[in-house]
Image (cartoon, rainbow, N blue to C red):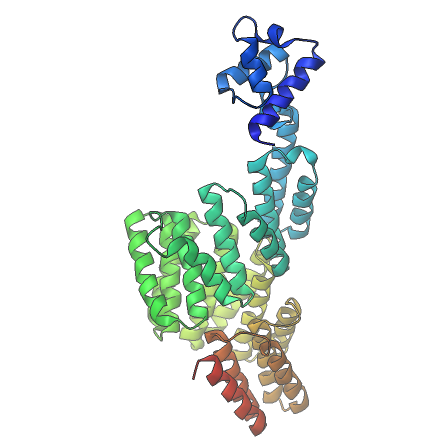
Length: 427
C-alpha cells in the first residue's frame, strides 16, 4: 500500500467509526467526491486538508499521517531517545535491547524515518558489542531502502568502517567509492569528508599508498574550503595516518595533535576516546622514549572507553596498546594481563589485532625464557592471520611473526612467515 492508500484508509475507518457519510464529512469545505478520492487513495490531501479532516473527525493529525496517536508517537520518540542515550553512555547491551524492543513495536512500522533511525542505532549498538557480521547485515538491509541523503551517507560510513574492522577491505573500498568516486559525486559536506576519511583508512589498510596520499590531499582541500570543525578533524586525522604509514612519524604527530585539539572542543565523547587511543599509538611509535607517559594516558583511557559507546574492537585495541607500552617500560606482568584481556575480547579468528596480541605475548614470554609458552603464542598468531586477505596490515603482522619466530629459533617457520609477508605485499 502507498502512503496515500494508508491515509485514505485511516480517514475512511475513523469516518465510519464516527457514523458519518462522506457528504457529512466533506460539508461545507470539501466536496463528497473529493473525500471519496482521498479515501480510495486516488488523491493525496494537502497538509491543510489533512488538518481540517482531523478536526472534523476529532482525531489527531499524527494518527491520519502515521497511524499512531500523538501519545503513541511521543512514547516512541522518548524510547528512541533512551536507546540513543544508553548507546552514547557505553551501556551497549541495554541500548541493543531498547532498539530491538522498539523495532518489535507495531506502531513503528508506518513511521519510516523513525524506524530507519532505530535500525541504524541497532547497527551501531551491535557493532559496539563486537558482532560485526550482524551489524553489517542490518546496514545492508537498511541501505536497500529509500533513505534521505544524510542517512545514506551515515550508513555508508558505518558499513565502510565495519568492513574495514572485519578485514574485508575490498568491500570497504567499494562502499566508499560508490558515493565518492566519479563525476556524480555531490559537493563536499562534513559527512562526505568523514566518509572520505573512512575510505582513506581502507586504502591505507590494503596498501594503496599512492591513492591514499592523493586522496588525503583532496580531503584536506575539501575541509579547508568547508572550514567546519567536523570536516577539519576528519581530514586532518587521515592526513596524519597517511603521513605515519609513509614514514613521516613527526609529521603524523603534528597533524594528529591539531585534529585532537579541534576534537576536544567540538567532538562527542566516543570520538574523543577513540582519537585519544590512536594519538597514543602514534606517539608510542614516533617517540618510544615517551612510553611511560603514553602508558599513563592509556591507563586513564580505560575508564573513558568503558563510559562511552566505543566498540568491543576499540576496547580490545586499547588493551593491546596499553600492553605494548607496559612491555616497553618493563612492566611485563601488567603487559601480559592487558594483552590477554584484549585478545579475549576479539572474535576467534581472522583479526590482525588478535595476532598482534599473541605476538606481543610471545615476545614477552621469550624475553623471560619461557620458550614453550612463547612458541604457543606465536602459533596462535599464525592462526589469527591465516584466514585474512592480503593487505598492508597483514603483511606487517606476518613480518613481525617471522621476526619473532627467528628470535625463538624457529628458522623454518620464520622463512614461511617471511614468504607470507612478501605475498601479502604483492611481492
